[in-house]
Image (cartoon, rainbow, N blue to C red; front, top):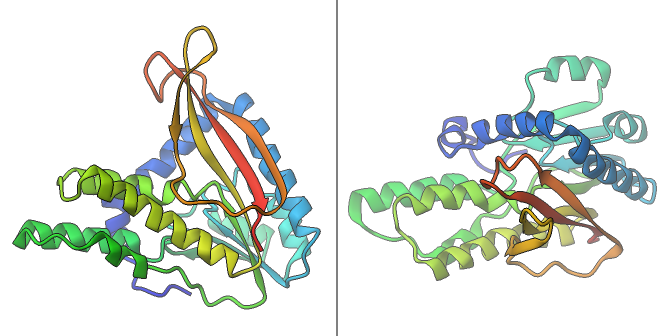
Length: 260
């Protein structure tokens, strides 16, 4: 189903594998606060899936499956595709429980990570800077028919580690980096809009001070999210132990909407 040759070593180098492991560690520390967010995701997915009639469903950014109502999906659809750059170690156990679940290892950004790796290699060898606009051609296009897609807490994650890696080499200026974030997010949203889909994503980061008030708000989404049906939003208390940002709690504003 991938449109490119997936090289897992590159994703490990960019930090995708270690970052995914870190998510589980944070969940174990923040279980009570995270469960509210995860249950909101599951409820939204169930309501959305009950309103559609596709034979299959695909979860984009399945990860540890913390926010995936897997039993419900397995019963409702012929095939459940779980798509991510890495999957939990207990995939064989999950397959035995749910035989119609397929784990797909793929880059939901359409190869932008490998493209960024090539940009760095070219720059290191020749100091040639690949134009940011060239990232526009990295379109995700899985060959799955009669399938609805759920973008699950992944839109904001598509560019973070990629850009962190690029920034180590000072190839692009701040304006170019913002343009790149927008391109990667735009590509993802455009894919969703052209397929039966819904989107769940954090869109703003709130830095909470000791008085429990918002000290700073950080923009996470640089692409315009189209107005869709069944729009919902909630607050995700992401880090209350002040480990993500020192001496500050971190909350996210999350939105959910049907795009097509």
